[in-house]
Image (cartoon, rainbow, N blue to C red; front, side, top):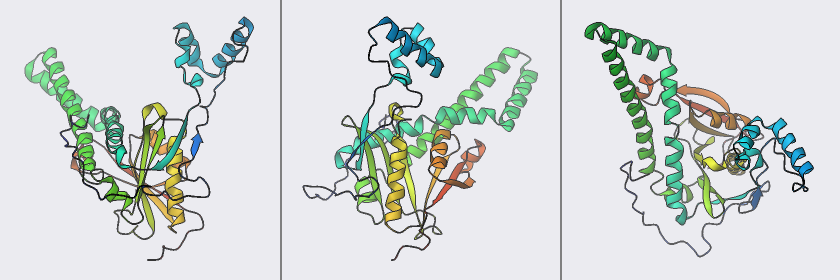
Length: 316
């Protein structure tokens, strides 16, 4: 995927580390490197132990059907095992980034950003001024050409061009991130002061990531840290991985005496907004990242979470 973006992926030479590597900071609430059982998805109803009997199957399936309407359809299609209510228990662990995670982290980040392009495109088409502009354009082409077919064809070209524009907006953001801090993750987050980078590992694969660093806003420096590069694999969403990663950042900032954690997320990442608000973050501002973002009605939301018991800036 990264090669399609035109981003070279050379390995950055990094100084050798000790055999033990970078030791993670242990927090009392949840030490690093400890396997965390993922809680079962809500509304999960396991089959009874006597599922081989007809009565046991009927009882378990009836309970699942009451709690998960999609189970009925999946059962009729012969795919009940794909229902999320019946996904098996999985485990993961949160640990610090290692050099061997380089390619997996960059790929996970790129996929997480690019998958929001369709949502941004739909948001643009739902805006009032975009619909008005498309209607005016269609009427103008229809009046000039005199044919409905030409008007519809012109509309299709405009919609296709708009999609490419929205896609390029996401692609340019990915390229910028991969060529800056994610180009040398160790130097950007593990060697820099008050910074860190964690990954969530399950089954030997990286399924989540998050970073923390001093914020770019000068007014927040020395007072807060910034949560960055949060991304979780689609197959592991809704299983508590994002909350665990967010919790690591909050504990990291609290342990270093900071009074708040700030972050930025796009307006189309609704699930991420719910996650942050559930962790105590509050939206404190919104802005358009560029002129192209303004034309596409695209905004970035700024969130802040004040840490209890931390009011003073950390010592320097």
